[in-house]
Length: 447
Image (cartoon, rainbow, N blue to C red):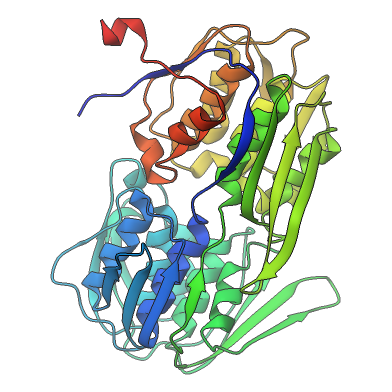
C-alpha cells in the first residue's frame, strides 16, 4: 500500500461539541487485566484502534476469549493469573509500543515461551528499559541488537520479587514490573522518583488487587504488590482519551473565532500536563460537568480561540504530557514569544525521533525552532506560518499535529502520509471535519 498524503488548508472558525474515542492507555490495560481475571468482564467505550486491536489479538493468543457484542461493548472471559497459554505463533503487536512492553511484563512471570514481533516502526524502538527489571525477576530474553524486536522471552518458572527504582519516569516500565509481580511470590516494589501515569494502579484496584503505596521523605513513591494474586472480573467504561482531545483543544485555541467542547474526557492528574500548560499560556479553557467515574476524574473541556504567550514547560511535567508535545509545539508556533520545553529526551525514542521530526516540520513551515538532546524551544511567528510539506516518519502524532497547524496557518500545510493515524485515532479526520475543518488530497497525487 502506498502513502496517503493530505493537505490541511486554512479553516473557517471551528464550532461544536464532540466526543473522542476511549483512552488508549486505559483500553490496553482494561483488556489485559480482564484477560487475567477469573470470569467474565465487560468493557464499554474501548478505543477500537489498530493498537488496541493488536492487544486483543495478543490476549486471545494467550488464552482469553474476547468478543465484541452487538451493543459495541467487549466481553472478556479471562484465564486467571498464572494460567496464560503458550502461544502457537508469534505475537504480532503491529505498532503498539505500550502493548508490547506491558505484555512482556505479563509473560515474564509465566513459565512459557513467546516471540514478539511488530511493524517496521515498532521494530526500531528499544526495549532495554523494560527488559532490564524483567530479567532481574528471572525472565530470559533473546532479542535483536539493541534489545529490539523481534525478541523471544522465556518466562521464569520461579519468578523472584524485586525492588526496582525507575531510571526514568515511565508508566510502561512501572506497569510491566507490577504486572509481572501479580504472578510472583513475595512483594514486588517499584520506586518512582517522579510520578508517572497511574492507570495500572487504579485499574488493578478495580479488579480487586490490593496495592500498597507510600511516599518517602524525598517524595519518591513506592508501589508494592504481593503475589500471587487473583483478579476479580469487573465491568468498566473507558473515558475519552485526553491525548486525542488535545488536537481539537489546540485547534479551537489557534483557529480564530472558534468555540469547541470535547465531552467526557479523562482528567486524571497524571494526564493533564498539556491543559495546565495551555492555561499558563493564556488559553481560554473551562472544565464543565466535572465528575468522578470508575475512580477517574472526567469532564467536558470547552475552549475558545485565545492569544497565547510563550512559557517554559518544566521537565517535571513531561511524564504527564509526553505524547502531547508535538501538538503543544503547534500551539507554541502561534504564541507570542518563545516556548521552551525541557526534559523531552524521551521523544527521541518514540515511533521516530519525534523531537527532530517536530522541529523539521516547524522549520518547513517557517517557524523558528531550536533543539538540544533533551529540550526544544519554539518561537511563535508574528504572522501565521504554513506553506510547507511535512515528513511524518510513520508517526501518527506528527501527522495529526501538522494537519492541525494547517487550519490556523496563512497557507496550507501538507503531510506525506496519514495511514498511521488509524493506530491511535481512526476517527480523527471525521472529528475535525465535524467542527468545520476541510482536508484535501494534494493535486499531484489526485491528478
